[in-house]
Length: 70
Image 1 (cartoon, rainbow, N blue to C red):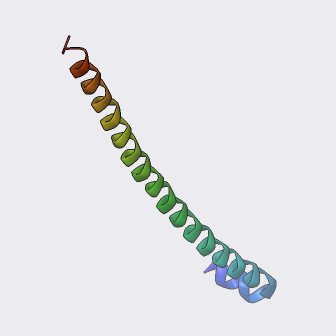
Image 2: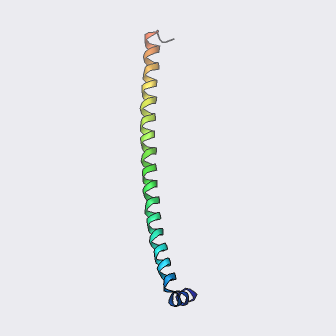
Image 3: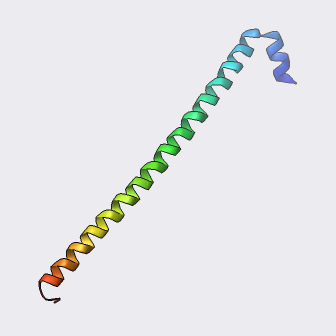
């Protein structure tokens, strides 16, 4: 394997490969965390928009009731 040969001949290269592997793990965890936060934001926005729609619908219904349903 070429990588095994390179890392045997260049211990510094192995250290860099290991460091990149750790960095990739950190990036993957950060990405998962970001997706989780984004999913939470979408849920909150959905709840808020449902509440606003309900309030606006209720206000229009009350307005129509007060004005005789016209």
